[in-house]
Image (cartoon, rainbow, N blue to C red):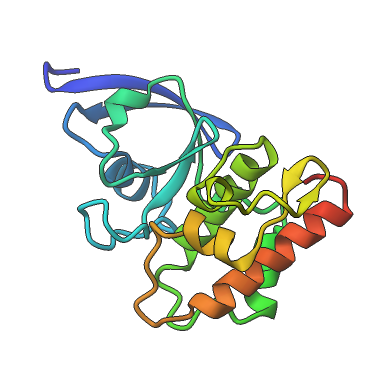
Length: 184
């Protein structure tokens, strides 16, 4: 290993990975170029579009702005790690059911962001909508996710095709499924 590389131990989609990376390498480049996990997309490469969203230790991050060296020891979940074996995750199912995509380029980032956002919601993290009087519809201890709440929480993910209404419907349906299954 030369002076410009760092050894990393990561858990990616449940699998322990030991890799070396240039200290300047982003998580996005590590995932796509070194580990060949190409589901995570490079959109703007400036942290503005959300196409590269993944989860690091349960938090949403834009992987194009996250230095790989800064997350040594972390648990990373990409779009490839959301489903269980051959079964789609409920978010993936509802994105198909509600046509939550058009060209599909932003879809991995949308689903990864929604996956982490639903976990944030379950643990009670607040948003601007909940601070703005939206806390009156409570289900299972959590504020019920209104369309306005979903839109605010997903604001960092851009869809150039404009499939926002369908994306919101898909996320709302997945949240409802989670509530019915007791995982909300």
